[in-house]
Length: 503
Image 1 (spheres, one colour):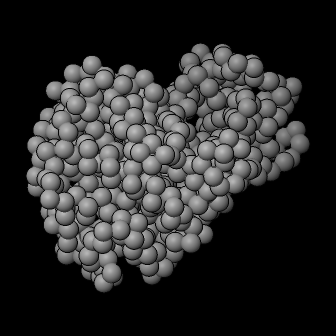
Image 2: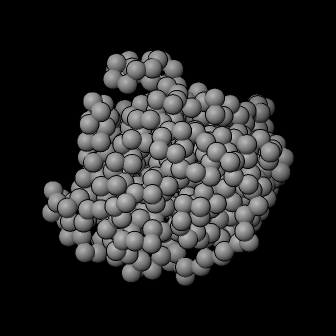
Image 3: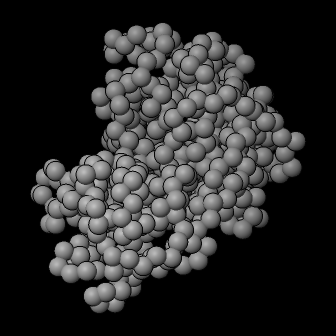
């Protein structure tokens, strides 16, 4: 799971089928044992082996990811599915040298990368020294309720002195890309955006400026931004920026497999992201979700009762760099193809060692809540309770929600700390992360809870089987929503696009 703005226009659907896979399946993974957890563990072992043989990770654009695609495709092909690899290109931003963000006058101070600031993804590259000019509407300290924070959201917020200077604005009120565009139009030669200072909003964030941006852009902690603001109000304050980055274009692939049976006008999509972060093999994030999707596909293929609805199993590329695979897939669908999809189920991290049982669904979307209720009942059959969260754009549900397709999924937790009430409900250890190895090299097969795999896979397979055989009108019977052609839901509350905060 992630903690890049999507394209807005639809493009033609284009699939590219590659040459036969070269990565060999372990002998134990070539059959589908009745024990779902054992099946998932074999898939996890295979993904671990892939990472070990390819530099320690399975990140998008790497040989480890390509080998993961080959492995997943072979599993699905041997289960009897016709597999399509959906090829597309991703643009990645990489810093080519360590950035410099430093206050030059009235006193010299070099800010700390990761502590005081983070460079925007797709920041423009330049070496700049110039005065800091605060935009109007900055609130230091911030209002207790957070209302009224909208610095930089209007072109009028930037005084004339902004031209050829470095603009300073505060988070809040609109998208970061809007603030950047307003600063550019005001003639700024760089922009610094700092956090609000509200509870939980003090540290620097990972933020994307969008692929077409050329303005150097840096996100500051509240403390660093506050100090610059106060200094700039009192006297001329000069900052030096040296940011050097490059954009690389890489090919990558989604893996898609449809059941031969089932009404294609009633398609259920079941998905998970296949890529890891560069820092590690990603066995919980998201080998666990990948293993669950593969095990579910194998389970459905060998069942004597065939699905009444078409089921599409999908493994997404490049989730960790902005939900790019699932976004590409949804944008590639025609209006007719989107209307055929009645629901999307997402599985992102279902093996966290200090896990919680979270159901990810959007409050206020009646159809998504109806799917969430199915997961809740599936857990309850085993006497297990579950909580509800809204990922708000951190995982692959985002583009489906934006297209008006109801979604829900399962999630066992990232690096947030387990509370005492969660310890009482789910077990484990309060005060410790759900997954201490989240986005780290230690996210290996040793980082997986077998008990979590058992509980989550049982609920997931139960719901997938139900939704594969029941009419959408039965699944959503309590919503009184017309299901003939899904219409756009209320605007989803997306605050992130994968790892990047949007506003």
